[in-house]
Image (tube, rainbow, N blue to C red; front, side):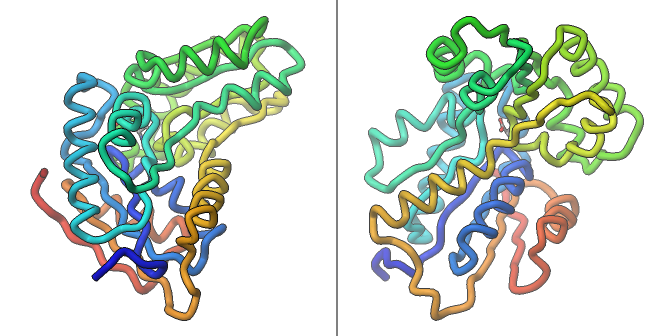
Amino acid sequence: MAVGNNNPIGIFDSGVGGLSVLKELKRLLPFESFIYFADSAHAPYGEKTPEEIYRYSKTIVDFFLGRKVKLIVVACNTATAHAIRKLRKQYAIPFVGMEPAVKPAALHTKTGHIGVLATAGTFRGKHFTKTTETFAKGIQVHTQVGEGLVEAVEQGNFNISGTTEMLRKYIVPMLEQGIDFLVLGCTHYPFLCEQIKEITGQRQIEIINPAEPVAHQTKNLLFSFNLESSGDMPPKYQFFTTGKEKVLKNLITQIGIHDSFEISEISPL
Ligand code: DGL
């Protein structure tokens, strides 16, 4: 089978977080089929070395190529930071990665203070430093590692007090510094949006989830490579996880995929 327009798009993350990106992709590209890979056995990537993150990502890319995907979305900020450049050099297939949305926040802030919540791995990557230096000159960028949050989402612990307490510990100091934008620099965090909003309360804080611009970028790339689906077949959603299917399944339904999907639990690659 050659790679054709009706082949699926591959999308991966260290776990279930990339589903926040799939949600936007599905909305914008309703006729596309997707293969989602959740590498939950290796989550969190944020605490792994760049070499390990690259190795896991490359293995998933090879898995996707064996299934003839036409484009790959790296729905993980940490893998984007440490693997996408090398992957692009090595493979001809188009890749879309996550952008730390510092640019729109820096452009629109009125207080001159913006907050970024991400993994330690994302902050360590050159991409974040470069983006901040380029687009946030003269702006105070308050960075905070969301230690423990990826694990909480992976375990499905959204509404428990421990998770809210962690969020409070991370977000309140940024609010006290006067931020008016909070960038979610990890694809797991949009699933904690309700709890985050409870903490930001009545304050006029804009929460930025980069999933939407990433979905637009995917659409643009599909069209520029003439790879968009013909739309004459119903889309299929296939999920692979190296963890347990329970939380993944809950979130799949939460993002609006109710039927025509398959989940397989597989051993870590
Ligand atoms: N969803 C991943 C990201 O956007 C989480 C990384 C991790 O597993 O630490 O960075």
